[in-house]
Length: 119
Image (cartoon, rainbow, N blue to C red; front, top):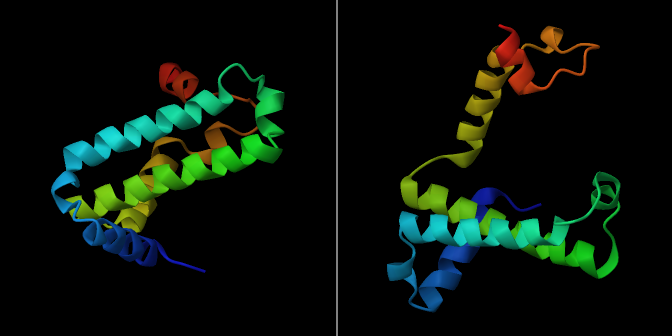
């Protein structure tokens, strides 16, 4: 299985082979990432929650491609910013675990914003 580092190296070579480095600024990568998230969003627009869980066939393939685009731009942005994306994600998980303790949500179906409001 590939790592994020391997994916980043592959895409970095793709960019270098096409002489696109000048376009890989954090600003441009964020804009590209936002565009790809918009394309992903469009695939789910107007679906019911149930339909969104049952996406199949060509639509599922399109979702996979847009998710891949999102991941590629996210990994490249982290690389350009010198951020270890996996370490940052683990750190964020720890922050969220402290911020939203599991015992506060057991059996009540409370959403994060409701928990914040109840404190």
